[in-house]
Length: 123
Image (tube, rainbow, N blue to C red; front, side, top):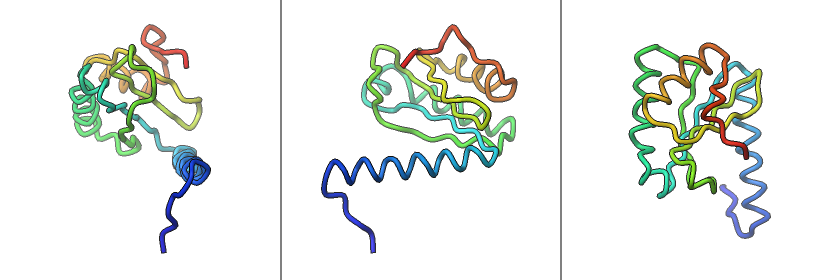
């Protein structure tokens, strides 16, 4: 039986468990690429960014990369936003991610280990 979320505390517990599960998955060698798809991100072109990431992952057979979406993360002025979480580094948040920048993130950061400092958003 699924437990219902009835309070902010329940929601925070659920969110923390989900985050821990993703972290465990990342520590097993997977890479997570998360695209913010709140209304502000969508308006700024996040769907095109997401499509570019998915296409690059497919084209390069990047089976270790998990592509997911989230809602607004509160950094509307930096949309489209992409977060990258790897096993060996902390989360990196990128802003103003066009499809071309997204492909660079996959090539240079995910595959090459080099953070693209020009697009990093300090959170």
